[in-house]
Image (tube, rainbow, N blue to C red; front, side, top):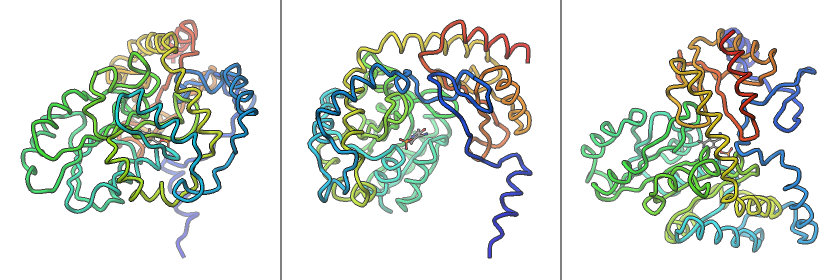
Length: 382
Ligand code: PMP
């Protein structure tokens, strides 16, 4: 038998043991062991998850709609409710693309789409820092893959030039806002590269950008003006959209193909129709949330400036790393900040590369300028 206890002990000894934090949520605050802290580790980027007014309005609507709290089946069997297709039409129209398809989560999307589209005749070229869910999708596909240096498009171009013509197609895979460093891919440059070579698809994960960036909150592809040129534009509802689930915006052809081949879509019960209705309810309000996006941008800039030289200079978004390198230092720093009323969490290998342990600040629009100033005072005196 494998000795799981020894393995856990080893994780503990190296400072890598994970546990589920026991916390109580109070809007933008978190309470842990009686200590009330400002949540600086949230993905609720627009503060919608704690907006009770919106939630009450939605629940009133939901009561009248009698939408069920379970689909009780995959959409391919008996679980396909009208609300899915209605929302997919809204998504496709908002992004001005032919089609959209909903999934149960971003994780499902990323582990499902690549294995559906790629086989040994497809080469996958992925940014070195793409999220674990994309790595899992790549591995599940069984397709050959190479990870290009992070945001290094010269490296990517070398790989494209070397491999073009050898495979049926190449899929370039990137995030838009990177989940650990908070820096941003140059999607326009990726589109230019894609157009220089034949048979290339571009896959972009906007998990951390949907809702937060772009004039209508549609993400970095909207901000950079290249939605139309991205073959598979993926986003999640579990972060800024304060719900659950994910989407891909793509051609009608790719949508139809995914419906026929994507295992997490075919073999899993669809999200509850009521949940889809909540995602839809918030998504159609996204364009009105510019004040929240402005506030998030402002406090993010302030914190990035404060952390310049310690990781802040890497970020171009509301995700801001404070790199302390060693696991122990990171953990101690996080504990000190928590004692002072700021809930932030250490991120360690294997989530980030060795020697880059960090506190990952992830800001939300409900945080005030004053609160950020207080955090900065504490950081400067720590
Ligand atoms: N993609 C990225 C870049 C992510 O950071 C995450 C979640 N942390 C996911 C996908 C997974 O999304 P979900 O939480 O909806 O499964």
